[in-house]
Length: 168
Image 1 (cartoon, rainbow, N blue to C red):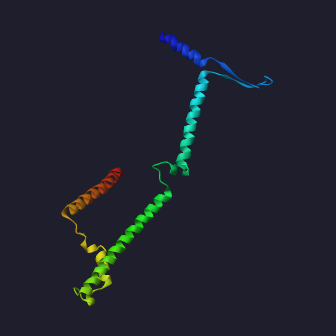
Image 2 (cartoon, rainbow, N blue to C red; image 1 turned 90 degrees about the vertical axis):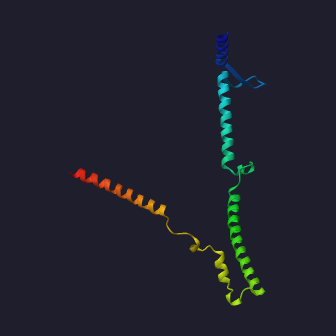
Image 3 (tube, rainbow, N blue to C red; image 1 turned 180 degrees about the vertical axis):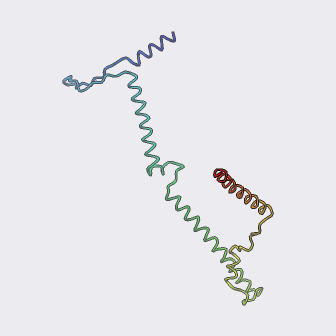
């Protein structure tokens, strides 16, 4: 039974049919096609795939993608980056001004002498001082440097040894 159904389906897929377009008034044949069910199925499948690909490319490579949720425009990204940099610089300027105002308040309250108060000294307090960083090498780092130097020397000697053996 199953074999008969498969054979019937194959026969139906490949039976040749004719599609004829006629002029209704004169019954003149405008054009005709010889088709099979398989040809129609393949044509519609390929047409659907082509339509999906064209739509995907139009959305992906044109400004239409900005209307889809989740996609952001390049201008928006540039503005966000610019504003992040600007807000960071404003934040550092605000910190410097707050320190300056605190210094002025100390002078006005008499906690600090005016002669010791200098705007440059306050500004230098806000910038990170390189002397605060620990730039001394640790014992582990010294050992690692020695090991790397030894391996480099060994690697340099090996090609030279090969050249000497090749010459002999």
